[in-house]
Image 1: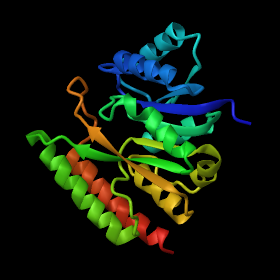
Image 2: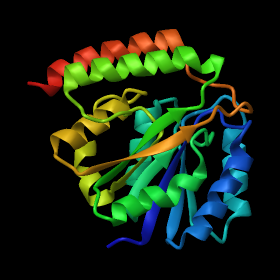
Image 3: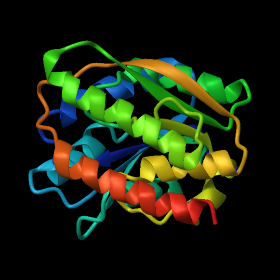
Amino acid sequence: MNKFNVSLVLPCYNESEIFENSVERIIKTLKRSGYTWEIIFVEDQSSDDTVELIKKALKKYSHDSLSAYFHHRNLGRGKTVVDGFRRAQGKYVGFIDIDLETGEWYLSKFVDVLEDGADAALAWRIYDFQLWSLPRWFASKGYVWLRKQLLGLPFQDTEGGYKFFRRRKIMPLLKKIKNKGWFFDTEIMAQCFKAKLKVGEIPVAFVKNKNKTSTVRLIPDTFNYLWNLIKFSWEFKH
């Protein structure tokens, strides 16, 4: 039985620069949504004061459905999301990047897509043209092309940190996920495709949050992604 309509997992790693503002915005949006909801913070052994800020939020919003799980060592983005999903009690479960480079105002739209019959709702990021975004844009487009060639996935954007699922459909697939890092995003959507889940793609604006120091390292992370993609493509087809 589902306790909530929506379970929102917020992966947290060194989020002190944007944490309090983002949480306030997210909670305001959820309260206006008309859905019952919970927020699950999963903290991945930050080196700043994110842990203290999460504990502060639990006290501040004690009348709301907030909970937290703290990793004792850094385990990676994928493991963080999976741990949150396993604690969820909602009919729908999803995660978003807490920096809100894709805005919190899309939350209801993603849930509505699931309400309309989709098994998964996936962000398709549209970049505001800026010179700073060109390297990331080219890397993203190149990855999309290669991913389609190797895996045959029809999706426009598997990497956006904004995904929602029917909990009963996604939970069995989590057992098949091997990557604990950033490649989790590709792997989970590959498993959705293989399981023939109905996926709704939602165009969203991606706007750089200038208040957040990015943890993305473009060159090493790109090579790591490519290596994981090549390795996974062989396993996926066999």
